[in-house]
Length: 212
Image 1 (tube, rainbow, N blue to C red):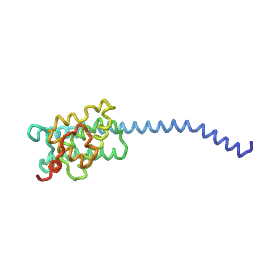
Image 2 (image 1 turned 60 degrees about the vertical axis):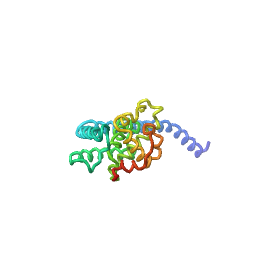
Image 3 (image 1 turned 180 degrees about the horizontal axis):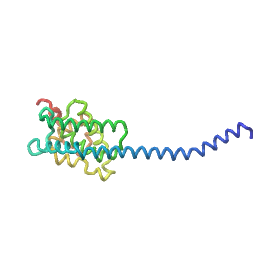
């Protein structure tokens, strides 16, 4: 065998020896990346349920449940006092950061939906929609986790009760209004079982906090 043939053969042998190591290294990197994504979600969840933000979340959720006759109604920023507005800005700023992390692909999607997505989806009904970017970020996050959860309800037991708290905490009318908003921004929302109900386009305008 000539020298150039030996060289070619040696290159093939070397590549064959390196390939398994590359596969193992790639798998390890993917595992480390997933671990980091899980850790980010766990840290974000801890921030949401504990400390100052945890208290803000509880205050706002209780306020939502008190609004309206008997059932929760969306909070409207221009109807809140200065203290509640600060709470609202704090919570929306948090969800804006979570949505930025989701869009960057730096969080575990499954865990995000389960631990933080439920809160985002609940507050997306509980806070009246407007066109501020900070509010749109919450809606974008809520639409993403709703879509993910509803696509996997049949396969994931832990998502089988998705939407249960929203059905119990908000009136049918409020959910119908919210459904109309969701269908306008996310056409796939029409398939979400927990949002089933008649569509009334005029009510969608009322949900956004517009006059009338």
